Image 1 (cartoon, rainbow, N blue to C red):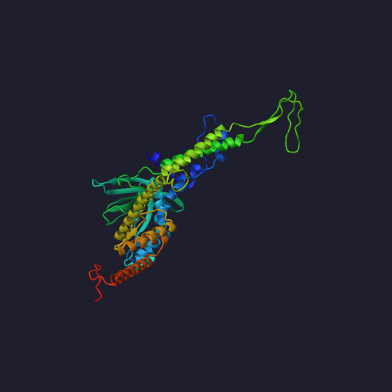
Image 2: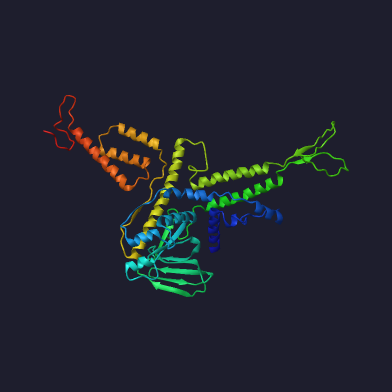
Length: 458
């Protein structure tokens, strides 16, 4: 079972990065009638059309198109943690963005929220040496063991990691329980161990889609797409082999029995009798197999985009009705929203563990996008003008129209500036309503019984 799991994660990794089996040709299967020499040459000529990477990226990039909105009480320790969450200089935003790709590609990624082994007496000492919590990502291929209690809570978690020490690479196992931790070498010797007071395993589950938390190793969402891309790689190699072996036309002509070999080129000519019934000509290989391969490749490319749910975004053009395209994009939008919620939950869980390790409360909250519709600014302006032209006597309605317009016209507006604009609009609307309350009617009379809520002028 573990070998099968390793094969899956290796395929996903190599398919996304175009490395390993796709780089050296080892993913290609030798044909039953293919010689060793032809097989070696086919691997040398093989090329990889990478569809997995853009499909995965299109499922992640929209979530991080803009800076994630984060609200918290800034502290010196938290600021230092945000600027370097993994002790190698990675900011929180970049770390989250990178691991979001891993979560989507592999189906899940686990974030270990660890703490410095040696802490100072004061916060200043900890800041000077960065004795703070830090993050480490664990890919599913490195998970060794886990257990849940009867309530579905994670009791323990074991994963492996490779470290470079004393000019050598060593495999280490890390075991976490709800109260203890320890590090074990390849021979089973305990190198370090200790206790913690978190009363939980400091591991954050980050799924690529909504998944049962007890499914520690869910089936990766893009496994079928990676397998399809592998088949396209194989078909492309066969197509290349056909082109390489059969591209050039062959000259054919009748010849006498004793006719010797001749060389035909651009600097000489070939003569034949004027009354010849069968003049020389060219014969070309059958193009049927190549056409079949090309059609199959095109069909599989379309299937990959369909399976990924982003065929309405890239890769595929089709004559569909406006309603059909709208429903298709709604499906894409919902998948992006679902993943954004997974990212938001993971980030909040990470900061919650940080607070417990650091012993401080930062009142943290983050908000990921809830809508990924591509707004047309011109259309938004037109719709806003049409809404205003309705002249509905509602201050709230006008402000909400303004909010939608700002979201479309100025999507990257700073929160403080956004709040100021809304406050100014509310103030203007308030003045307009007051002015209307005291406007005379067509006969010059002021309504003594108006219900505006403002005092009448006597």
